[in-house]
Each structure stands twice: as C-alpha cells, then as structure tokens.
Length: 274
Image (tube, rainbow, N blue to C red; front, side, top):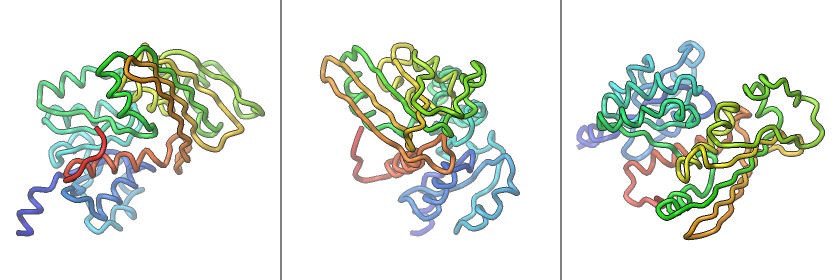
C-alpha cells in the first residue's frame, strides 16, 4: 500500500536554492500531500551541502538540463538568464515548469509553443500579487486598461540594468524618485529581478505591451509596494499589497509561499481560486 502511494506521488525538482528555492524545498521535505522532492540543481553544490544534507529525504543533485528526467514538475528559482536552460529541457519531455522569473519568459515566448508541441506546461504562480484571479476572469471579457505603480526600497533596486545604464544615483535619495514609466515589456528589460509581478499581471490580462507600469525608488518604504488599477467591461477594481522582502531584498517573502500554495493545489481535493 505504501509503495503504491509513493509511486503515485508527483515528483518535484527545484532549480536554484536561494531564498525562494530553499523555502520550497523545506516545505516539500516536511510534506505536501501527493508530492515529493526528487532533485535540485545548484551552481555550487558544496555551498548547499549542509542544507541538502539536513533534509529528511535529501534529493539528488543534478545539472539543470536533467531535472526533467526525474521530475513531473520543475520549479525555476534561478536568475532570469537561466530560465531557458531550465524550462526548455523540462517541457521538451512533456513535463510542467513552474516559472518564478516570469519576466524572462517574454524573451523566450517560443517555449510556450514548444511546451504545447510536446505536451508540457508552463505555470506562472501568483507570486507577489493579489488579484490575478480577478484579472484572469476579467480577461474572458474585455479589459480596457491595466495600470500598476511599484515602489521599492533602495536596496531592492540596486544593480538593476536600467539604473546602471542610465547612471542614476539612488543611494542618497531622501524622497521618492520615479525611475520608469512605460510598458511591462520594457520594464522587464530594465528591471529583470524587480518586475516579475508586472509581467505576471500582463500575461493574466491584456499583455505586456498594453499593461502600463511605473517603477519608483522610495526611501520612505520598507516593503515592496504594488498598486494596480483595472478597467474592464465586467468590473472596475483596484488592488494594493505591501510585501515584506525576503533575505534577498529584490524578492518578497510571499513569492515562495505562493509557489508552495500552487504546488499544494496539484493534488488537493479542494481547490480555492482559479
């Protein structure tokens, strides 16, 4: 009976053990109904040896292109530059890929066709944004506009390519500074580690070219603050969320929890939300 149960579990592999990946790995190791952690891929295995060895059921350590061989679901928790190397082998094998660095998906949109051709899936978790269910529903009808304003503490924006290329000094700010205003697609290029939330919003709604976003560096806030306004034929609604940063100031604590919630849904008897 035990062997039969184990064989029916969905195997989950994780690419990247940063602030998000370690939380997901820990949750899987502690137990999520119907799921098991089968493998991880990390750049420096020695760095993560203590963490992996401390798990109740230590997973295999494999190269990122082999995760799809031992997993039904591959979770991408790596820099966006690694997205294709993680997702492509998985969906080619007909597996599901959970994408956290969704901004990187815009430059690799052919992966969706590749997944479709091979029976794979690409799943974007809700991440740091409430209300994606409402946007998904509104998109069945007609959405007229989606506008988003993101305010982040200084540490969460340091190193963004838009700031570096435009030589903007944000270290000594004493009041909020609007860094960017434009489409979600352009924002993703300039802030690849900061606006995954805007790209997810755009994919749920009217697309990355019509979704408008402002990005502010704000020394007066300690949380990642997002405000969204949606105008649709079915409803007008606004959303606001203030996310507590994780150990990585570019990422909110709720991002890892969102992936864990998504994984729990894969075998849950009761699912709430679309």
